[in-house]
Length: 230
Ligand code: NAD
Ligand code: ZN
Image (cartoon, rainbow, N blue to C red; front, side, top):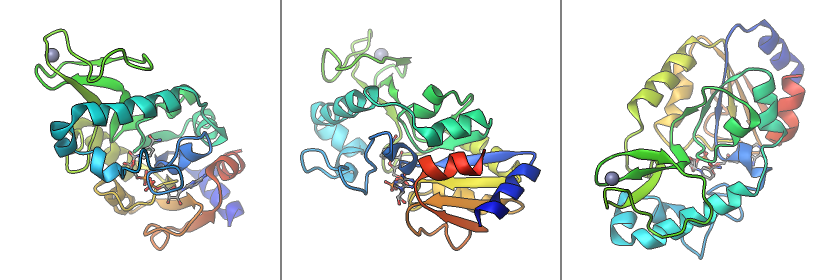
């Protein structure tokens, strides 16, 4: 199976990888649905929402500040690095910035970036990699409250990123779907846009994408991707 998949990749002019939390798991960033995904017994679905932020911005920020500290301490793994080295175009649902740190350029971030802060008052965004943040919730120069620059459950995806993702996926010859449970829409719907492409799934488990995929490679992204893209 991996042999055939490698031949598709070798023949491809354009390769895109759609990645999810699973690609960062081996770096030590827990997925939402896997072990270690809970913080103080809150489920991510109860914190990563506009309602939760409106109710208790400090609590939501404490969670993000904890995640930022965790991510700051880890490194991109062999999976991120293999994609960067092979020059694969990355469309990610992750907010951790590990694809950037591995050297991928022009990463399409469908769900935003945990290192970006956005003002709920004036709308200004800025990058801030300070960990931990000095004040929670952090404040903008205008006095407004800053929120994490990520997409929460129930929010629309950033239109420019979505368009870039659609374009890349529709044009590619091979789509790698890596470490995503593919249950979070609309990102998961991107796979069905890759009509002309071979779809290769890399995941430890079967997912809804498995039956759409031309090849399903079961195992760890950090082991399979270097092998696949060698
Ligand atoms: P998910 O938690 O729903 O699913 C993770 C998937 O990765 C599962 O299918 C699992 O089988 C697979 N997986 C786990 N370890 C793997 C490995 N080593 N190699 C290959 N596959 C592995 O994650 P999701 O589908 O990305 O969706 C959850 C949402 O949560 C996303 O929108 C994402 O933005 C967000 N999230 C981001 C991060 C991050 O930035 N690192 C972490 C957690 C959640
Ligand atoms: Zn402001």
